[in-house]
Image 1 (tube, rainbow, N blue to C red):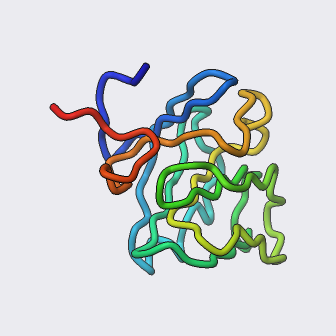
Image 2 (image 1 turned 60 degrees about the horizontal axis):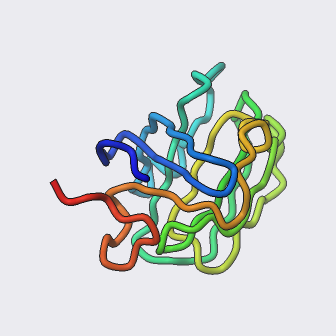
Length: 141
């Protein structure tokens, strides 16, 4: 089972819990990653921001200047969710570590992962993942 299309502004997730889709903004350079979702007062329920790194690496996030609670899903280069940090606290400057081999981080509204049943091991689909090695590759057009 796959969603009909695979585009840069969409992330699809699947697992034993079902499937979900989020419209996302992509942060794939240092400046965009540093800004993230800071100063936003709200975000639509089915929206998020995905951060991509040039290679898998150790990553840490904080919530300085972030006004809304967020769930952070830390994803490896194959598109598998390795860690979920739920309900990061707005304004908190404590570093949230995601692991050593993180290629992408999806931020969604706080509480959404639990409400939808998204778990570690869930699979993510997005064209940024190397389609040859992706656990859920985009379908060829």
